[in-house]
Image 1 (cartoon, rainbow, N blue to C red):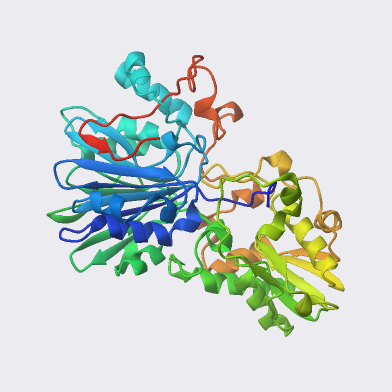
Image 2: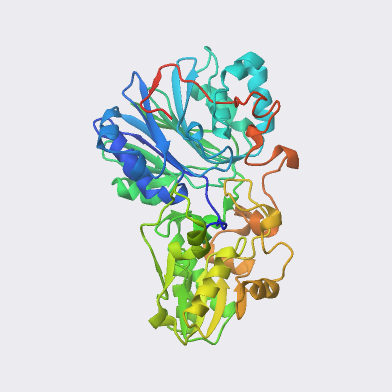
Length: 501
């Protein structure tokens, strides 16, 4: 709905090393399976062993690529990326993979996550390459990904692998990386393992991806997760692994609640099963006298199923979703903007008229969507609307790769659940307990990040003025120069871009 933005993950990453295969098409379908993780831009880089080619643009994966573009991306290894911005604006220049020159060739890199020490890393780039070299990098990219790419340049005495092993321990925050040079595919995951990253095996190659469905869609068998603090290398000699930091697990619990696809498995736990279990717990913790349980599609569906199973209240589809409403760059008129959520959801009046409803959703951020939804259900004849949420109240922003609203905009920051329910116009409102949510994931509490619910951040944060999506775009030494040029876009030595802004 215009004016309301739910939690958005930063990106999906995909990498493939497969001689004899059409790697660009494998990357395309892998990104297609990861589209939910980012809808602003998409890109694929491939290498034939001698030269890296990259094609990227704004829009959905299916909008960016066609047969002509994919056929031009030849080679035996590829890196792909679909983006939702959490550092740097939504611009063509910030689309990934990023390209950079190295001492021995080129690096193409895709990143899912968000770094928290960009301030220190900008200084490190300046120390290593000088202010003039830093200025040469300044041609439009304002992302933390460009910082990593710049640092991977290294020197003539180090391979890309050796440089990565030196740089990766200096990064703070969440990062799941796939990157490559002309001959080798790499993948790395931060020591906390905040964002998912998995390894798969093809008959004639290897795949790394943000989630297991991207393995399934290309016919790769799941091997294992990339360990927190691990760098893997894949080339003609096979797979090798290095540990660049000890694991201190703090996986994002919101992957189980909302971000990951329901057919994903994370640390051996089916995301769909976890969400059904959350719904069952919710029914025990916040029962309601009602005639029908309905989900807010699609993210609320598994929890609604669990709520119906546990409560004995029938499950029904009271809302229909327009499957073809994706991100659009066409702004609606004022009249259409006021209709808001009806662009995506519409009530099934004959199903909900006269019924006492339990409406199950995954989270409440600002509350605008739920308020409009409740109004719409009442206008369609619902007798009562009881809202149940399969996560605790979101009270704190995320600095590890989810683009929540600012703390001041979070409706749960300052209001009790009863006050939130009254503000939304619900007859009652219930949030799952933190304990209930964690139990449903079947993970240890001390191996999960719950910062958005608790305010306890497992990775130390810098001062407030060194955080924020637009940190590298602000005028001054860390961001955009006064003349409007922006820092930290990396020019590639032996690479070619197939399209331009």
